[in-house]
Length: 97
Length: 100
Image (cartoon, rainbow over all chains, first blue to last red; front, side, top):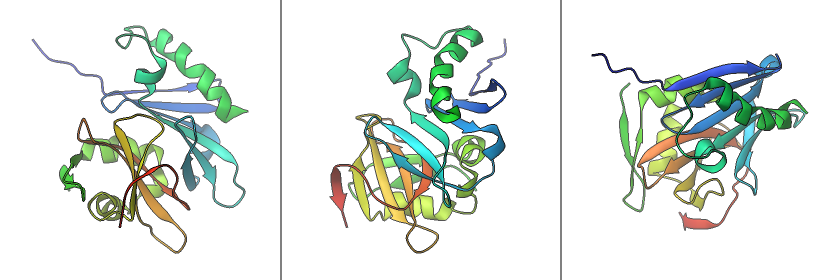
C-alpha cells in the first residue's frame, strides 16, 4: 500500500491573501497576492509573528508564523481542509487590513 | 545542493533541507533567492543568537547579509534540529543567547 504524505497546504483567502502551510516545519506563510514577488524585510514581533514589509514604504505585505498549529491549533491537524482554512482566516485579516 | 547539517557555535545541529529551502522558504520569501550560502553561514558563524518569541525551542540566528545594513535571520528549532524559515532584516531583536 502506498504511503502518502501531505507536506504543503496552499490556497487563497478572499482573493487577496495567499497562504502556504509547511506541514512538516509547522510554519504558516501569509502574503498579499499582488505582492508575492515584492522584496521584503522581516521582523519578529513581541507576540512571535514575523511581519514582512516592503523595503521602500514599510508596508505590511505578509506574515510568517512559526509553530502555527502548535500555538493556534488544538490537538492533531484536522482532516478537514475547511477546518484549517477557518483557523487561517483571522490571521489573514492582519495582512489584508 | 543537498540537505545540509549545520552546527552552531554552541554545538547544536540544524538541518537545512532542500525541500524546506526550495519548497517553502524560497517560495514564500523569494528575496532569499541566492542567499542560501549566507543562511548556512548565519547558523554556523552567526553575529548573534537570540531567543525567538514564536517558540521556546526556536532561536534567531542573525548573520551577515547581502549588503550594508541588512542581515539574514534564520529561525532554527534547536530541539527538533531543523531550520524552520529564514528572512532578511535590518536589525536584531530579542533576548541574546550568544554573541560573537
